[in-house]
Amino acid sequence: MSPRDAARVLERSRRIAAAPGVEYMVGYGLLGLTFESGDVLAFRRFTASSIGPPYLSIWHRRPDRRWVIHTNVEPSRACPRYFGPALHAFDTDDIELTWSGDAELAITVVRSRLHLALRLAATPLTRLLGAAVPAAPELLWRSRHAGRAAGRLLRTGSLSFTGRAPAGHEFVIRPRALWRIAGAAAVIDGRDAGSITTPTRQASLGEFLIPSSGLFATGRVTFARRGSEEGP
Image 1 (tube, rainbow, N blue to C red):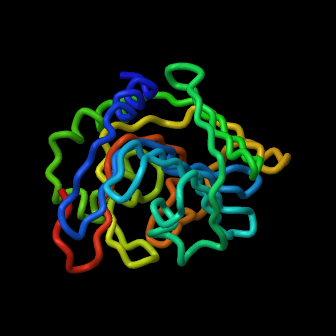
Image 2 (image 1 turned 90 degrees about the horizontal axis):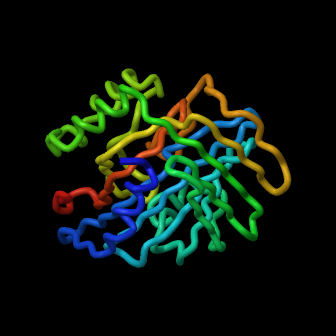
Image 3 (image 1 turned 180 degrees about the vertical axis):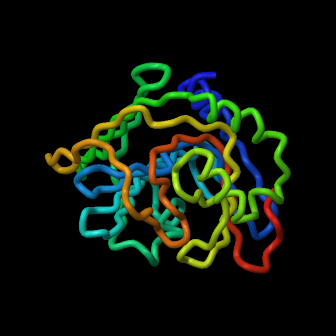
């Protein structure tokens, strides 16, 4: 299945429920990408959420290392709910996402004048991991060893499948399918961010580590306060 087809399947699945005390989302997005300018970009398209409507959030770490999140819904129903304490700013903006091919997409944050274009590619390793993921036990994703091992295989640095968000929620990410970023371009307020690059040190937002080379994923994530019931 192509990335666009996988996204279309998720876009048709809008109903969701979660266990008491757990917030649950399903969708796809760019886990993170670093540019020569020092800008770091990521996005989350959650097609179903237990706390509100589907939404888009764009994460932007500026060259001065300050994080900003743009979202197209009320921030309390999106990523700033969990990562707000670590942000320099967050806002609500019109965000457009369009697919121009099976593995090409673009995102525009209208008022903030941020434009990101991506070209995705499957590799033998991402296909292998994608085939293995559905059979993996839930306990695996709650182990930080899994993120380190997967990161070594993919050469992305450690991946954050679990951790604590700045607002205090414990998150667990379970990927469903993965693709590499084969090409990307970004223009931010009229400024070209340059080529994608591999940083000498992984960026992070709270305990979420940004992959040192770009990854696009589909999957699900749960957020729970410490001591609440386990997620589905």
